Amino acid sequence: MKNIIVVFLLVVMGFAGCRSRSGYSESPPVVSHHYELVIDGTAYLRQDPVHPGLILGGNTGTWCPRLTHPKSGELMQGLGHGILRFPGGDTANDYCWVDVLEKKDWRIDIDEYIAFLKENGMKPLFGVNIFDHETAGAQHNALEEAVALVEYMKEQGLGGGYYELGNENDGPWNAHDGQQLTIDEYLEKYIPIAEAMKAADPEIKLLGPAVSGYDNPKQHKPYIEGFIEGMRDHADLVDYFSYHYYGETWIDRSNNNRIDLTRPQSLAGQARDIRDRLAAAGLSHVKLGITEYNAAVWGNSDVDKCVIKQGLWLADFIGEAFCHLDLATVWISLTPAYEPAKKRNGDPHSLIDEGVDPPCPTRNYWPCALAFKALANEDREHPVHVLQVDSPAPTKQMTVYATKGFDGSWAGVMLINKGKTAVAVEITMENFPAFAGVRGWRMGEKEYNQGYNNDETLVEFVPDCEENVISLELPPLSIVGISVLCGGEQGSTSRQGNGH
Image (cartoon, rainbow, N blue to C red; front, side, top):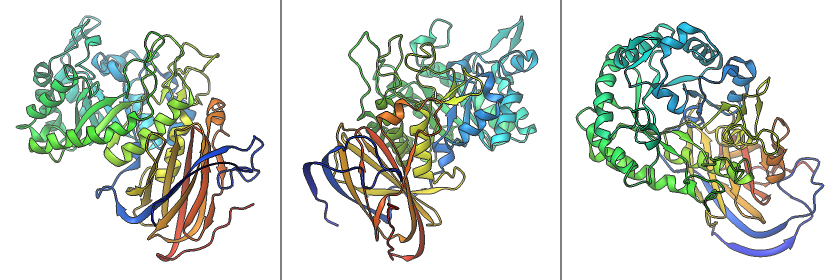
C-alpha cells in the first residue's frame, strides 16, 4: 500500500479503535495526523531468533529482602523476565557471596537468589566481584571465589548461567575505593578470572566489560575499543559485550537536561558500531547485551521523575531492544520506589516497589508490562521474529514495533505516540494468516499517573478491524499494544468487529 500522510485537524466522538468496551468519558481528542502503515509478515528486520525472556530481563539488589515474597516473582513474570541480574549495580564490586551466605543477615544471599530463580523460571545473571577483598579479617581471592561461585551454581542445578565481570569500572565514581580501572587494568583481572570460570563450567556465558555508557569519548570509547581489542586473542572468553544505556546525562534541577524521547533511537547506531568492531576483531560470535537501562532521572529534585515521558522512553527502548539487542535487563525491577508526593526517598527507576508489603507495581511497571503483552504475546519462553514496519511517521512523533511468533500463530504491534495530540493509524497486515481475533491495550498520561499499585492501569480494548486492516487512534502521549491471533491460510483475510 502506498504510504500517504494526511494531516488534518478534527474532533472525533471518541477513540473509535482505541477504547475499552465501555468507551470514554473524557472530552473527544483532537487528531492531528493520520498515518497508513504496512507490516509484512514475511519481511524480517533481523534473521536471527529473538528470545523475549532475555530481552525483557531485570535487575534487583541484595538490599531487597522482599525478593523472597511471592508477589515479587508474580510481578516479575508479568514483565516477561527470563533472566535476573544480581547483586545489583556497583554492589557487584563489593559483594562477597560467601560472606553474605555465612552471615544470613537481612541481605539477600545466593541461596535465596537461587530459590527465587527456580521458583520463577529465570536464568541467573550474576555480577562477579573481580577484586580481592577482606571481610571480617579474612582475605578473599577474587578468582578463587568466582570459580567457587560457578561450581556452587552448577551444584544447585543452574549450570551454564550468565556472569558479568565487574560493573562500571570505567566510572570515576568508583575511584574512591580503588575500583575505577583503566581498560588494561580491567583486562588484567578479566582474562584470568574468565579462564578459570570457563574451566569450571564451559557452558557458562561471560559478559564484559560492563561499561557505563557509549557516548563519552574519553571514558566509554577507550573501554569499548580496548576490551574488543583485548579479546581478539581470547575469543572463547567472552559471549556477550555488555554496556549500560541511560540515554541522557544526569537529569535534575541543577541543569537543563530532560528526558529526550528520541534517544532510544540512538541504540540502532550504537549496536551497529559495536557489532562491526566485534566482527573486525574476529569476534562476530559475541552477542550484544545492555545490562542496565532507563531514563537517567537521578538527583534530589523531582525533575522528570515518574512522568509519562519516562514511561514512553521505557517502552520505546524495549522496542528498540527487540530490534537490535540479544539481551537487556532493565534498571531496576525491584527496589524501594519513588512516587511523586508520597514516597520521595525511593528510586524513580523502580518497576516494583520493594518498600511496601506486599511489593506492588509502580507507574513504570506498566509500560514494560504492555511491551511484554504486545511484542511477546505474554510468552517469555518461545522465540519471535522481529518484523519491519513501513511507517511514514517521523520517529520523534511516533514509533512502531512489530513481531510474530515463530509458528505464525500470532503477531504483535506496539505503537508509541510521543506527541501531545492524538494520531489516527491504519495498519495493513500483509502476508499473515486470516485473523482469528484481535485485542489491544493502551496507556495514556492519565492511566500512567494512576499506575502506582493499580492493576487496572492498562485499558483493554478491541481494535476496529476490516479484513487485514486494523484502525485505531493513539491518545496523546500514549502507548498502545495490539495482539493478533492468526489462523487459516497464508494471505487470507477475515472480518473482525470492534465489539461495539
